[in-house]
Image (cartoon, rainbow, N blue to C red):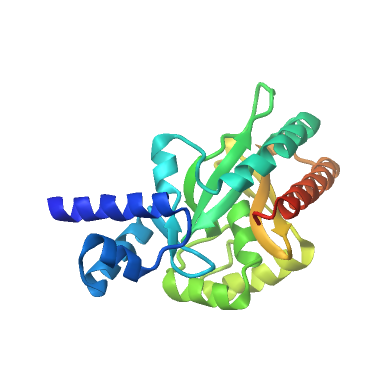
Length: 250
């Protein structure tokens, strides 16, 4: 067990030091173990959120180290880019808002801002399953087809914000409507404390990089009010998109 922990730590530190995607062969060479042995270690670290697959191949540091440390080091370029626009959005609409991404089948809240109202909704910081929240569903809806198929193959479906979705196939039917409308909304929580949540995608060079979400107590809900919030969110998403594209980090 001690040896496993040392190897776990060595892989994590190596990935953090490299600041780029690392391959199994690199980790194995660094540890002095076989690739099959190293693959088992990396697979466990991915499952726990300490590593995650990179779109370019290989693996990068996942969200868990930042969550444990209470820092915002994970996907820092998105955090830095979104902070000011998110602050401006909350100042404008005076409702809680957040920027989220995903790691595996979990939603990760990168940054959030609270409004100054006496009654407001609570924002779960980390690791809600993607299917159970509006920001997560947006991320699933905007996945490329190949990525979504791999996601469905790897992760088991058990529940979602759509009451009639019983498996990935029936859930998928809702995603088409989400993509068409460019947003998703839903109510959650007990009747005495219902929350309304709204989410839209944040793009960079045609790829969904994150989701922008807003939540509020259900008693403040009205069609007119939510439409006003949606328009403000869309403006904020465009600002973040332009900043990401200019930075070249997206």
